[in-house]
Length: 240
Image (tube, rainbow, N blue to C red; front, side, top):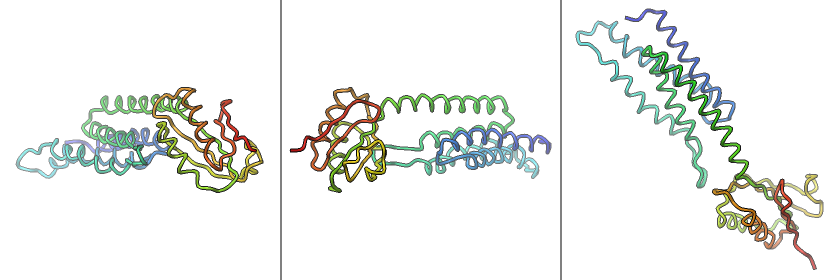
């Protein structure tokens, strides 16, 4: 039978470990953050404690199986993780957060069972994985990201054509920002409309590929100028 001190110690440690992982998710603006991870870890630990000691205190004639109730956590956490997965076109977000919730539940079970070394070491490895891969992903994202600044002489519907060009060249549109050209110091003031389109390449596009996209966008009716941020790539439509 577990003492009250051991029960409190395991619950508190579980909340701390879950909170550490949840904090990392929170500061990165992920769907499941600090509170969700703490609750998942605490709930998993409590279920394991009930499995180990809760039924024993009820003086059951038959010995209880501690793994039977705890095993349901592994499958049940999948429903919660599915709520963090979002599909945006061809892009799927939230898979890492769903995986962190699943691992977090495992950490809670480990702490509840008194397997402290496994729970603490797994938490450290999860943090290392999330933080290191986050930095690596950002660097990769920067290498695969482009921003096209487009100047138009009217509010004509050219966005569909731009989307088609991006699709043909395997460019995923992340963000579209429309503004008045006069309000942006980086844009020339000869245009009535400015459009900034941030895209991500599904593969490492060469300079020739980017130049081709630039050329095709500049040929669209209504487009006056187009250039790529942080480069010297620039196209201006010649007027008669």
